[in-house]
Length: 170
Image (cartoon, rainbow, N blue to C red; front, side, top):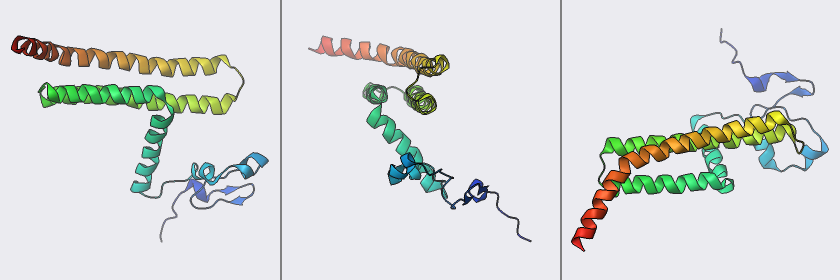
């Protein structure tokens, strides 16, 4: 006998069964006027490519809407490019890349936390919401400082050497 597949989308709701791809969304005047993309945000990925598409949508959203994410992207690209231009070892470039990736991943988490907090508290002020947002931003700050330290230790000596060689050749 074939076992039934457990699925959240197959669970009954007070208003009947849900569709296979979407979670239950209560119908209110706000949800009736919301566009189709909002209902898509509840979609369940039914294969790996769709999961990657949703993940890329999150990265693209952060790039479009978060100034700091764009700054981290630009600085990270500059750091890796400098690493290649200065002929750093692949291990050193990988370390720089990993620290940049950690900063960008934490920036994505910061964006997600801020969005969830905003969704929860709306336009009202709550001290715990401030603490959650500040802590998430603090995590990004600490990882950014660590990445700056790592890039400085790995890039700065090679950059100074290259600058001295260039000035002696001029």
